[in-house]
Amino acid sequence: MYRNKSVESYLFASDKERVVERVMEMWQKIISALRDSVEAFINCDETLMGKVIDGDREINSMDEEIDLECLRSIAMRQPVREELRFIFAVLKTTTDLERIGDHAVNIARQAESLGKRANTEEDSILSDMLDLASAMLRDTLAAFKTSDGGASEEICRRDDQLDAMYDKLSSRLIGLAASHESNDSGVARVTFAQFMAARYLERVGDHCTNIAERIYFMDKGKNLVKH
Figure (cartoon, rainbow, N blue to C red):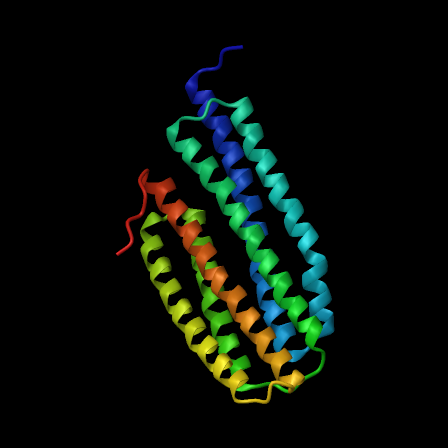
């Protein structure tokens, strides 16, 4: 049955509002999971470890639900170019968010493998990396909600800061490992876990950059050229 374009646009706007709301919910859960995972790692909090690992199932389910909602909208509506850009951005964005959720689980599992231990200066740097990664996630969320492509370049620049923090911590950990006897398994285990946690946080920045680039494309209709 034929429907005029104004009706189609109205119906798609309703779909879009529902999808954005669902993406916001998923995003908030991702931010909480990431913070909980690092807190669990630093404080050896077994309750938080379990919360992050168990909560990943819900995040995966939300990813699947949003994908289905987008595909349903394509099948039932006649989205125009701008609307298709939005759907493309959502499908790719939720994939990045789901992977950030996986990184949070991986950090929690690293904590699980360590058990009780004393905090180190390297844990403080991990906490600083978490603060920056969380801020990037929140700012990317705000940009997505308002389709603000203008915020994308700043988000990408902050990823360079996160990379620099990761490089600094990696060098410290390599030096720390080299300064101890090779049979000091306790130090080696903690150092390796800290290195992996830092790597997962660095990857969060990469995913935020991916999302920021898609927001730019969704808003401007062209690819972001990074300087």
